[in-house]
Image (cartoon, rainbow, N blue to C red; front, side, top):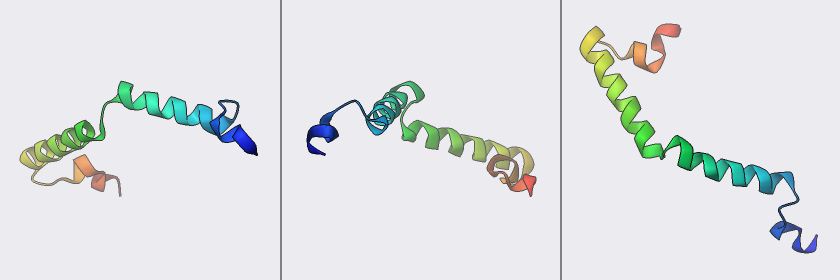
Length: 59
């Protein structure tokens, strides 16, 4: 396949490029962890359980 791995002509290269740019738009994983943690704490303080923040109330 030669230099095809360096080419932008494959779907995989395009997907990888778009996924990498989404990390800039969406924010780092650390911010998501803080947000989830904050929501779990708020749910526990309000309801005495974390079920509403973790999806446990859906089961």
